[in-house]
Amino acid sequence: DAGITQSPRHKVTETGTPVTLRCHQTENHRYMYWYRQDPGHGLRLIHYSYGVKDTDKGEVSDGYSVSRSKTEDFLLTLESATSSQTSVYFCAIRTLRTGANQPQHFGDGTRLSIL
Amino acid sequence: SQQGEEDPQALSIQEGENATMNCSYKTSINNLQWYRQNSGRGLVHLILIRSNEREKHSGRLRVTLDTSKKSSSLLITASRAADTASYFCATVQNTGFQKLVFGTGTRLLVSP
Image (cartoon, rainbow over all chains, first blue to last red):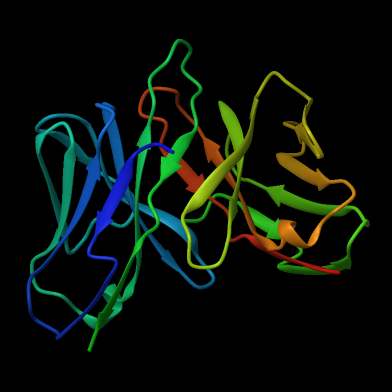
């Protein structure tokens, strides 16, 4: 158990509203990631963070912003939600042990529906 | 863009049989990883194979990597009903940020 909690687990909202998803970790890992999962696409990287206040864009970052003001929390914000952002969102962390090749550990996801 | 394509998209077998899933990718990689996802849950890491490795084992799992063909396979031997899940390959091009690029996945159904 990598100690990852995503909240909320489910959310239904309307087009045009702001939405913030939270990823919380308890083990002080440096690297955190946000993915979205859609049928036929697998998982795609939205944004990632390599430290407090250090973030960068992934493959599908348009319409999303992130913030990491403390190590344990990585927030994903949809400033003005659109129906195309209906998806399941996963947070992941990567442990940083010796050696560069380390797997990622995933939370259980947030199912977001935008009507 | 998706890095990996997985084949087959769906696979249905009986308990005790072996299951083989294939993954092809497009660019050079540092490592390739396989993950399992049970319905409604997050992904769980199964095995990582580096680009200079050709085969790796973990319990009932066997992974091969052919960098000349840009392909990998995951073999699950003596499958069990509990192996029912979706399986994804993911590639890492650079070790720095370890950004994973996922394939589209194979849905495996193991019937008792």
